[in-house]
Length: 449
Image 1: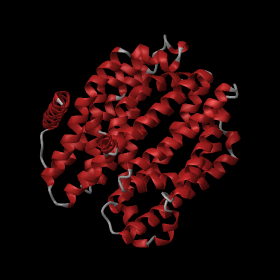
Image 2 (image 1 turned 90 degrees about the vertical axis):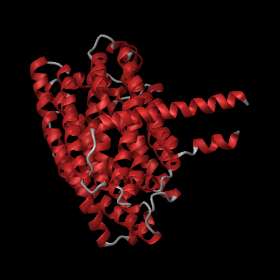
Image 3 (image 1 turned 90 degrees about the horizontal axis):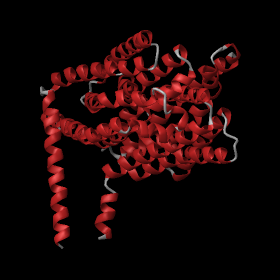
Image 4 (image 1 turned 60 degrees about the vertical axis):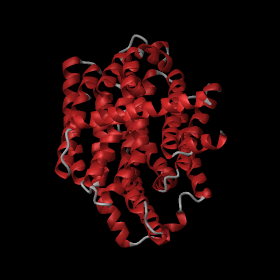
């Protein structure tokens, strides 16, 4: 009894989902504490800081994550050491360049009038350096499909931070500056842990080669578009709201978007486990299997998200009350949540179309796509604020880049192997019914025994 349960808990899909789930739950708990401990304007400044920090980090993660897994998975031991060392070189170079850019910006920070920008300029460089080892470690363990170790890294990175925040909340020392210290401390401690455990493979830096560095770089310069597509639009909205409506409006908008984690958890989890399967099919030269695998993952996740989206729309007011507290009950947050949840069912299409384009060596399409999506997002958001004078305009405009991404992704994949977009949903429905019947049959058998 215990052994089959243990095997199920060690399943890569479960561990990947658990890792993202734990991150989201801890992040939600942290947000609940912060929204109650800090004024609305300070929350808006923190949201701006974190959004820009994660956007800049996208250049590192976008360059390396997909490329690292592609060149590392299934390779020989010597090749693996070469890939890790080359990734350390590229990651270190990107980190160093951005940290150097941060120095003159820091020296002239007194000339920036916006306090959110000043906060970012003061702290970006050192946080970016502190997080490098655990970022490389995350790439290594994901490529090896050691999702138990990835779960540990994610738990620590968020766990240290929330522990520090909870201490500050109980001791009434929570302020924006101390929150930054807590975030930096969490990143540094997690990196130290991964180096000590050997997961970061720091010693492999000497195994780097110029050929491998060039391979990763040339793939990464386009694959960065895939990662940007999941981060850039939210960040552009953050900047537009911050500068056009102010930090308080940004705090309300961010609260309304927060439960989008319901969508992001399974998307990130199944993207992590689906990429090796897609890569294997492509490396075998089996084009139909690549598309069928993509349709199976995309359709099944869409079916699974349908009841979650419906429930979130119905219970939006309750969710906002629990997360934000009394002061956000009569704000626009609940309706913003409803708007985003309404078209969130398109997200699996966008994410897996982009992922599959990377797998079939078409990252350039993703790169061009993300630029078009960004342009559409910015134009739609600015127009939305101009017409409505509120964050509702940005929320409604959120469907524009998603539709653009789905359309271009579908066009790109059809050039590779033709398929109908409706077949994605029929495949997902068939997979869902099959799984339900399988689970129901096992339940009946277990009850009979």
